[in-house]
Length: 279
Image (cartoon, rainbow, N blue to C red):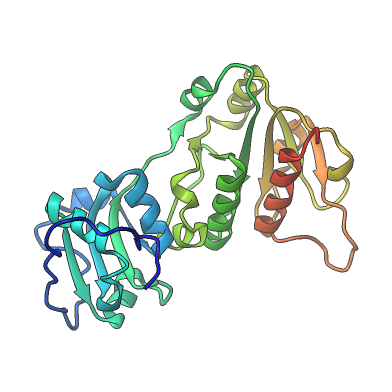
């Protein structure tokens, strides 16, 4: 069965397969401290979990899977055996309860969270005078939109900037929609808006408010090498004061048959246009 882990199997004996557990309702072992649980995230979906396995396997704390996924997940299970990380073969209904979703793709895992890095740390890590792209998410809250944005950001090499007071965080649903992109995108926690804007300007960034109408034509605008697109909330749009503080306003021209693009679809268009600059 093809899958992200369908690679050459490790040498040595096949890892032991636990007996399928039926009627599993407890999401974690009883000895797991509640404090540790606060630092963990429940992921589901093949590509989401594969991305963690490839980039930071030490973050994996426990795995649940369907028996039909054992062959595809053999390298992960072998690693779990070597590292004494628990895994359990369960039934379809158990995975649905564990993931709180029917879109688990046959595997669920608890992994350590990665907290957003401070803005100054992210800026300090950029190569001097190098092109850089980021998304400032002002009010975006839908986890499926967030996941789609992360997937596009990973594809185009953009960071995601989270406002100082935002509760937006990576969830299992967002990570699944991101298809592994969540592990590749730097998440950055901003300072309060005036300070964040000053720091970004000091690092050579321009800020572009993305608006449905009244902005410059995205496709006719020369974009700078360092740019932050400010994306507004799905329904309300962005904060008016933040939009006014941006260096420019940009819109995606269209046929007028619909009012606007979904925020995740619009994000992909904006990112791709920056990637095409100068061509």
